[in-house]
View (cartoon, helix red, strand yellow):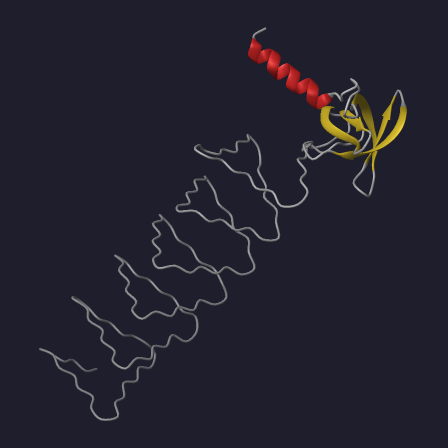
Amino acid sequence: MGAREDRLTRQVLDTLLSSDGTPTFAPAVHFTARVAALRDDGTVQLHSNAGENIVRVGASCLLSPAPGDLVAAVSTRDAGSFVIAVLERGPAAGASRLSFCGDVELSVSGGNLSLTTDRRMSVSASECVVEAGSVQASAARVSLFYRTLDAVGEAWSVSVGQLKLVGSLLSCVFDREQHFARLHLRTTEGLDQVRAQSLDYEARDVARLHAENVLVTGSRLVKTTGGQIHMG
């Protein structure tokens, strides 16, 4: 052992031992036990060869203990006893649960964060906020169930093979609206009404208006022009 290691050893011993050689700290006792029950105040009742103990869950023990679990615990003179790790899950433990107290922040620096499961992933919260420079989602099928949906943005571009909208009311408000289609079919069971300051219809080949009764009225002028006009 070199001089540097000897110096470090002496510094550690001076920190842990007093001048008369007695320890300056209370040693912790480690033991294993089975979880007997979870109490309402957040503490855990343990059963071991030494008997029953009521302990708290340590901050570093993220996996929540469940009845029947084999856990590692530590007992200190000043701070009390804590569960520090779950060693083995019990037969009735159910799903593994990571438990935190207070605000939690997961930070990744200089790398990527991936969550992978071969089954289902669920997110449940009273409010969910996502902030990102770009969001991409890829799925074979997407289903949305909501009471109210609000979307605000500068531009929206959608490219789909088929688009189907079903609802009780469709309301659109635009400064300018344009439609282009190779074939446009519309069926209205009730009233189909258009109100405009000026109305212009133009067809390259044939324009046809047919009904049981056709009324054409003008408050000042009604004009019909054509190379040939057939009446009757």
